[in-house]
Length: 72
Image (tube, rainbow, N blue to C red; front, top):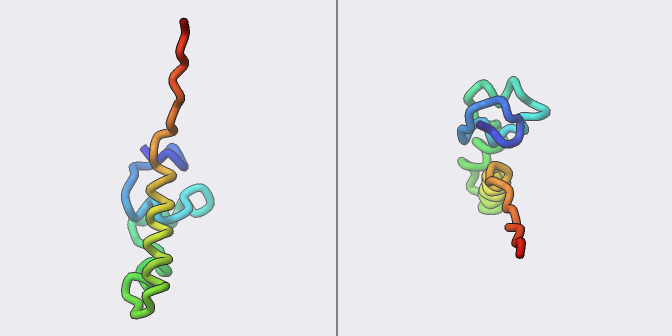
């Protein structure tokens, strides 16, 4: 289950969309055009930006770290 919208199955295509503000696009199963264009770009900085966006999207799906409570 997507940790951002809490209503959809997590897929690469879903998490690369902003599913809170673009739920219809996230449900389509297509990659955002700017990601597709960056993947095919000859410009290295565009490729790096797409990778950074993907890493940020993956980070939003990680479970929150909880600090253990130690009781005596």
